[in-house]
Amino acid sequence: MTELEAYHELSAYTLTHGASSFIHQHLVDAYAAQAATAETKPITVTFALVGLYLHVERQFNGRQVQRAHQWLAREKRSWPHVVLPEKRGAITAIDILAKATGRERDKAISAWAASVWEAVGSREPDSAETIRDVCRSLQML
Image (cartoon, rainbow, N blue to C red; front, top):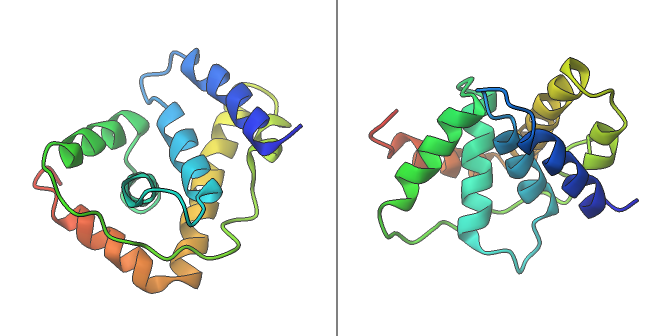
């Protein structure tokens, strides 16, 4: 199974989850940041990292992250180019899929988000600070 196939299967799981915390958002952000390439648009990387930062460092749930993304999308702006480290966390979509559904898998999704965000922060601190600056510009925070 590929990472993308695992991500799709996890998406089906999180979208039918029903929890008000909307863990699907953390899944989307972790995968987008981890799978980003040089061709990935800056807006995609920025939104993914904003979501990870808000979840990991500010303890936002997925619904709150989704609202922050909506707030960011309201204004036209030039999105920063953020340097991503080559290695972006030790956890992958395949690892998450191996976890039992329910609480164990849900915790693993959150751990994945933390793993990706911490990899960026420890290996590219300027990029992490750029994302924090974007978040500080949100008047909703």
